[in-house]
Image (cartoon, rainbow, N blue to C red; front, side):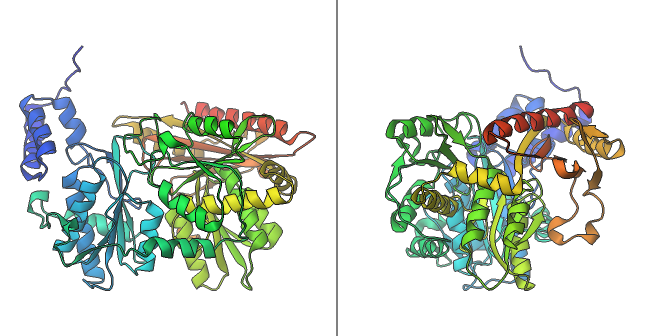
Length: 581
């Protein structure tokens, strides 16, 4: 049955058709221009409304969305205008200098190289020097290059672990960390003032070698990255552990293998069907290592070779997933919070510095790291969600003389384990976690045994999430209304645990550090038992509910863990139900 066409006024139709026609006329890409012209010719108003009634918004994560025509999709026209806005911002702030280039990199998705060429072409036409990676490259390596080359910015064309249909545009600032306010707002304002894409000056074929302002990344950059990553290992150890590895069709494989060879871990076993970069992601429905089924091929390979460890990167290699043998013939994936606690403990146990160590985690990550840090006398800091805040908080605290930033993590599999990259780095984190496993192996113990030891000191912590999706034009408003309703009429108890306090992070930002500013986030304290949080997603029409519960190990720590996790999961659903979802 044909889709229903929305009922609109004649003026509304005329306005929509005019906007679409103007966009097509200004689109330098013949393919997406033809797509819009075909929609206009067919009077496909429903599809045109979808593409033209909104536009992708540039924020602190840059841009991310589905590839397609129109301002509400990722396409060449959007990339060109976005890059010109970025160039105008950089020129107004620092001017053009060959000593402060802009680094450009891209992942292996089908449109990424073309978008990266457009970005480099616009930057060079604006008079800015560009250093580019000519092949699909891990995001952490591009971020490292931005720091190493003292770039004034970096652009990575990547949609990370999003579906195959998506693309993205990620920006790093002059400190080689992801941008934070006010830069995102200033860039967004500059983009708004950019002419239609066809009128934006752009150098064609900027990677051809004929443009003096555009140069490839130095051939030594990978070696420099490896040296810094290896130098930051808390307790270097070589091993012959069998380590099954998958990059999930992403770009991390070759770099991770090179790093592991130099580190002395010689037992890396590839998941061959997923090793070569392929932006179509043919063996997984969703290229996110957190998703059910994403690690099935890795688990099968690990069972075949009697492996000691499974590690996985997401497609741009800035996240790390881990699974370990459970001693009963099965593989147990570790949650991001469990990996975070284990890495934090390992780094703090081996840190050698006269300065007080600083560890940082996002507010929706488990409170367990704070307990681990306290046991070592380290400082623990909490930030808003997003690695940009974690890095900028750590750097700011170092500048203020508060200590040395040694570790940061967020529960969504993101970790930074040294100063090489000012962002999450799934390759460096994989190396340090493998060192951790090898060290435990040499002591005759396991990762899960060490996790239980941490639980016995810090409490057995579990974390559960529940998401409510509300698509459509009213979805975002209904989600924000739900957050307000939770503050206005909070539950007195959740799952039998009394709610002892409420913190509304929409208020009081002036009394908190900049990395813990205003956010649509509500925290319900459950006292000694834990807490619950609710916030709208920053990238989807989704309400996200988190529950962190603390319990005791008892006679069987993992049975206690499973019972507590079921309780936390039920509590998260209970909160959603209480909000009418």
